[in-house]
Length: 172
Image (cartoon, rainbow, N blue to C red):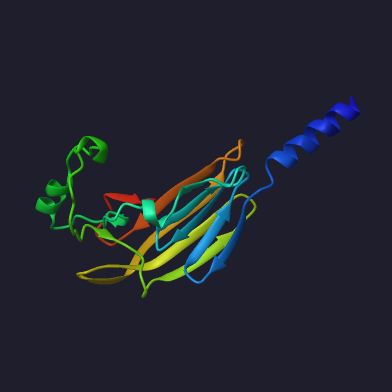
């Protein structure tokens, strides 16, 4: 019985090593048992399968839209309506070009990035977000990265702005 319990405990600890992270300036790479993801300015810019080395996503596959960060629509109902449509696929020529938008406030050069690590999560907190319309020093975008019991990457987002937020996006 003791041998079986020890084996199960050892197996569980090997399967869930916990999160590892490294920071290089504004880029933070977080590794779970299965994936390594690099976050930059509120986006996932690189995603690799750690088991076989396959690159799942990188900058060449990213969506060049400005729909990343904190969604803010205060006084911009017409702009939100322009962007609210069924998203299609490029393979069937259903994808519409969004063009520029100022609905999303994103981290940039003026933002401050704080990284915290506890036993189960790496938390990225970006303070001060901006658009082409300006910089908003009081706005906060937080990305809480963890892993589930199978070693899969989990990402939860939070946002804070004076007039409210309609959504938060951390795209690949």
